[in-house]
Image (cartoon, rainbow, N blue to C red; front, side, top):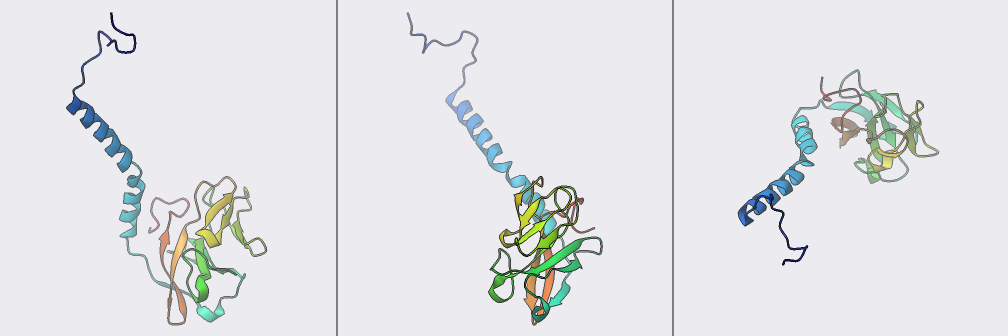
Length: 175
């Protein structure tokens, strides 16, 4: 008589060691590739040539005063900020200058900068984003960070040269 824990089910198919390894590796490979699909799409989009746009002279950007502009095209509102502290993706002296799409990732309402709270806040449903942490969602119904406009300083000019993240309402950032 055999122990209940070692008894095989009479209809259970026998799986060889080779089949077991193949199944395990296939599952592991699928689990490893699945998170990479969004990155692959982002890389395909990143291959798209973004325009270079002169946004503002470096010395004309005041701390806590938002500067509205459009990027990468005229139908894409954005905001440029000089923060009090260094920021992720920031440029200029101390890395304090950043820019973001000003369309909330929840429903596309225009966000507004509140310097006293150091947040970009959507007036429609109160989603709040931290401009010093790559536009990360702090609270609210949005589920994604604000798309960050990639900046560089060329001479004394701050230029927009790309976008990280997908602008609300679009399948691609370049129309």
